[in-house]
Length: 330
Image (cartoon, rainbow, N blue to C red; front, side, top):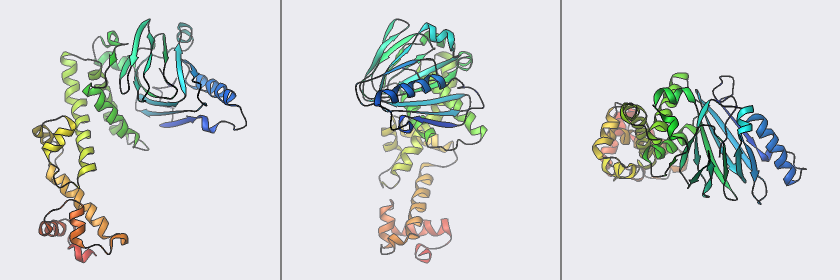
């Protein structure tokens, strides 16, 4: 099921936009709201024809531009998508789309007359060919739109892998899901140098997810896979730094990496695991000590709450980091 901006690679498009059925006139019937939404969707997006389930109509389309890429997400009761040879002739798009099923319903259909079934969190590479897909009553899917030349130049014979389903257990696809979720939290997108880095990481993960081999895979592993693994590790640390038992081994178990690899990833950034955890705990403790909501809480209890199990070490570390004792700060 494909959603692609007509100007996906164009510089004039805003960095992000949203199109929701909630913004349509309330006086219209459910069916008329769908017809209006469908007409606007086709005028802005084109490429596909859509249909809806028997549920009350609602749909939201969000699209963000990441350098030369477009990241589009669709959710709602739209459950049928068709791309015909006619629509391709009248509105071509020189791009690949990585189509991802992010909902709970299975999405199935045909792509170039071949059967395709996408379970939740799976994906397939779409080279803008004829297709018909149907989902459940409510669906959530996404398209990552990548200019054809970029993928063709970076990954040999990638076009031969269009239409092949990428399962949810694929490591590169899982990292791509997580990486794109991180990108969604950046608003507005950062300066051009960082956008280029984000875009290159996404492209490398797409290549690996679709089965890049040989030198292409080796380069993508060095760039994109390592960056995405680092992002997954740092995200886990930020979410769990209060746990006194947090270690390279426990992080590795949750991210599918060895403890040594976790340590090497973090060392390459200039900060060790222990340094990262200490900084997060100290900043957390300082924020709590400065917050009037915790003024009745003992300093030792705050130290324990943020993950320290040695109060003397906490006091020494706090003074070294901030130039005063926790009590003086209070």
